[in-house]
Image (tube, rainbow, N blue to C red; front, side, top):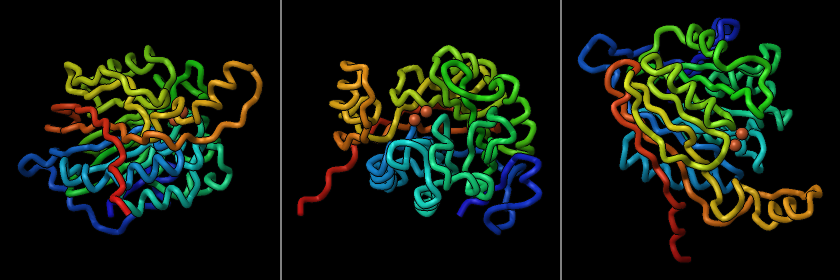
Length: 295
Ligand SMILES: [Fe+2]
Ligand SMILES: [Fe+2]
């Protein structure tokens, strides 16, 4: 179990998840070496199952120190519930990030306040449930996780570009920082990558559910990608059954959307970290759900 604590000052004093004392090896050898697997928006039960079925293969292949997932669509395609979040933590996920669908399920509100390892955008209003940063620890390496929302075409009460400074200040002493920028506009995400280059280990984009081909390590040592993509059905339209999405666009009338079950894939990135706050590589992972063994 990873240790975790909220970075937010008002929460930090109240809880620290996990009881293992710090075994930080910082200062000895190459303590900041780590590998981070970040997985894009889990869409519905099929997205969650795809993650859980791919995870053993990915752990064997890459031995990630940390696994962080975006869970904003994991409960039936919209939002997250305590039960689905618990199932992800039970599978060994270190931290969960969210986005514009954070508050779709009311039952998650108290959970967002009480569970340190789940973060909603830090630039939401302070009065909204939850917190925007957390710190998790494994193998003596401390990873800060920050969630941000874009301000273009999405509802976020405060500027991502000003609130990131507050969020970084709340993290304290960490070896690496992963920032999930949940945003619609590519320009905002690219600008955030440059803005944070050299100050954090990775800036990864989410929300569009479509992976981009621009993963790279920026000159200052920050791994960057505009969008990681989703973990869910490629046979739909960004997660929705394609017939329903097309009908909605054709008729311009309300259509009840359901999660597609066709052609599920895991989409993520693997970030290898060298020195503190430095990435040496970012590798895209696009992987179909493993075939079920014949009955
Ligand atoms: Fe989103
Ligand atoms: Fe999403």
